[in-house]
Image 1 (cartoon, one colour):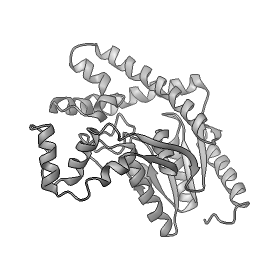
Image 2 (cartoon, one colour):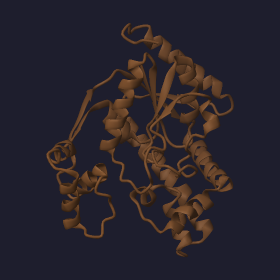
Image 3 (tube, one colour):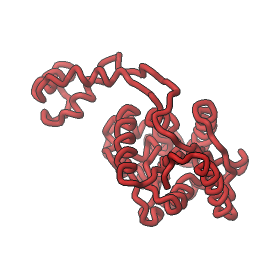
Image 4 (cartoon, helix red, strand yellow):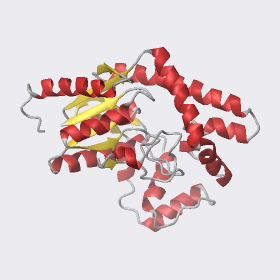
Length: 298
């Protein structure tokens, strides 16, 4: 059985995933594009070790923040984890807010990048290295790091784009969405940013800033790009924090739009006062649907 938990930021997805994993003997796969990066913890609201409660988690902290980890990479890695977990007789929970990543993993979502990669199969590491050096002599990639060499060449190939965004499911799964009213959600988002500052977000962002390395993850990650402007002296700290909250709210709107357009979602209101009620509601829904599908194993 595969359970997908989606929803906007700050709505309780992580907590629900752990509770359901305990109930359904499941392992959890990350479905957030930013939480794959090591060290990017506070701004991404990455689950803490003590919050995992012994549940096995996958695809967290799997690459360096300087890596260009793509939706294609996630599709490959997530499908491998799904097959591995289910082969061991356990259930799968995918949780996160990056709808495109989750969609690509679960549907017949193909990339021309697959064809691009195959055209390098006959080349040696040295051949790839020389091709890269012809494009950029200053590139700092070791000759034996074949994966990074191929990625660099793929980025230079304009044909490495989505080829087929089909709606054919590759797996049977339930899609659970957590939601709440807009005013309360925005309040939760604002409060979460304030808590992040108390937990050390400023120091975390400064650590990356002081390294002087630019990367796609840092340029796009909410919480970092806004504080980098503060470190550059372009805005005040108050303005930077305001921008983090504003951008987080706008991102939540985009998440809702994608989820509603691309997934068949059953939505549940988050009960912040008694979260166990939310868990029980979702459990009742899953159990009632399992009873009509004998192919789903618990």
